[in-house]
Length: 250
Image (cartoon, rainbow, N blue to C red; front, top):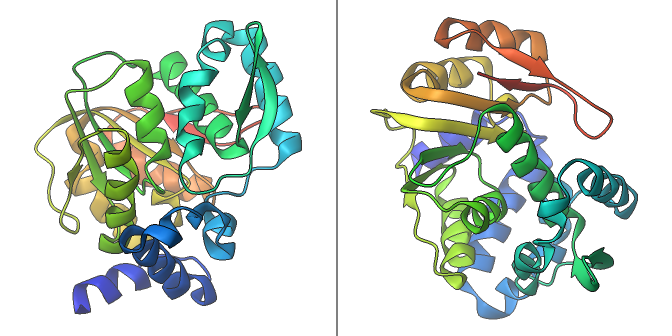
């Protein structure tokens, strides 16, 4: 229990949200009724399900222009939204109309950025630091699959990830705390590693991020500090557009 509390303290999220988020994830993972509506929980909505319909429309139009083949796969991606009571909106996918949530559209957009900047291919060992409920993992699995996927997160959140991903028959490895990584093809962290305190981010660089061939991070706090921490592990490129700021990758 002390280790779990310490991990929570290293997270710079407002205190009023931390314990509520952990508790709501654990409840959703262990209670079927709560699992069916967890994406409508106010705290989970604030932390994960926070993309708007207006943003989703912009992302959809961007993908339709830059990755039309991904739009044609929306019916596959949108299967994520049959779980958890997601709020969905209709969009066109080829000749069909598909109901999709803004969060799933965000994960599809992230997958686009991944294919553009670092690449995705079958047989990869992928590590994700802070995996939400497993939504991005599910989209990557839909796109190319993987050899191994390792989640670093709080234990209660890992339980929700496992519950969500098992629904789709997806098997994932869950790291115990910040265990040292031997090697990986890609480390991903979308608005998660960046939210940790300085010393914890530094430890992640030493034990996990530096062990990967490729890195893809969205920095949503102090981007200059994040860059300084990441540079020793390899030259970092940056990217931003109207849909997403401060992508750091190598």
